[in-house]
Length: 248
Image 1 (tube, rainbow, N blue to C red):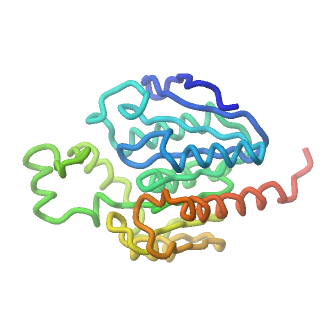
Image 2: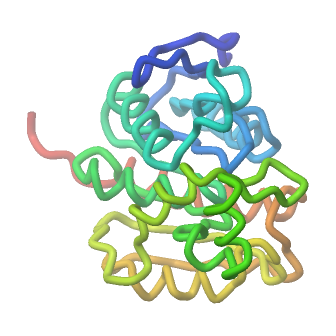
């Protein structure tokens, strides 16, 4: 069973994690913006790992969920660094990274920076570059003027926005070579479907598939939507487990 939350340091910050031991490949779940490791998709992925006997790691970025820190201090590069530290310190062997929304953006960078470890990637309503396409001029001006854009939810700080602008991906080919599966809702109002098409086109991997869930929104948390996500994960797991092994 998954243990109670434990804690590990990353970048000098105390992060909460849930880790299930099992066989390879390890699943690494990366939550979305202002989300955490105990959401519906994360829990469903953990249950899937239990059924398949797979290892899985879930964790909360600093300032979110059960981890220490202030949310307002979170930036994309900080949370990417934490994801890489957790991958390096808490997993072994091939990893399939499953990123939701902003977590999909972080997953893409993780695959770029750890090509020898990331054997597959699943983007759930992946939101690369949302600091670029997701804001109009008035909202950008508010961030510059007030240090934060407040939309009535978690808001976006100037620090996060600026770090995102330094980590844009969609303006050029993305040299990821591992298999990639994208699952996107037809009616996603937060990450419009054209973003998924653009990501599909920019990925250099020869094995990229986009699954469009009819009528689906951004959360993709209905049972049939989670089923589509798990089907994509399962296919990548089978691919990794059936891949020829190099002699040791």
